Length: 78
Image 1 (cartoon, one colour):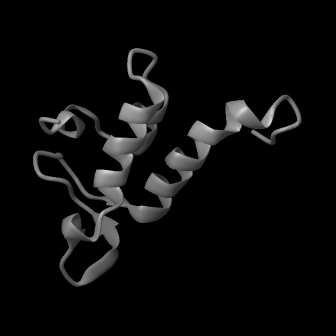
Image 2 (cartoon, helix red, strand yellow):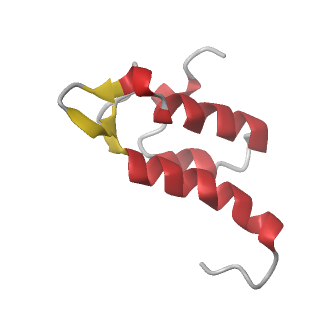
Image 3 (tube, one colour):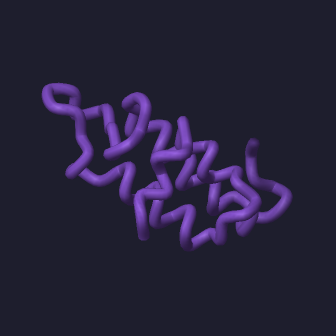
């Protein structure tokens, strides 16, 4: 996969993109969550190559969790 994450500004841009398959979204978000892209001296932040700014790991994990919500059914919380 050629750094498709560089065109997204935030993890939810990936999670909510209707043109991406769920497994592609997961791969992109997993690459964002990787320790390889952790910001030095700021372990809670990630800055993938080509990204314009760093994002909190909590936002990445929340976006990954959002991918699972449709499978949870209508009782899932927003």
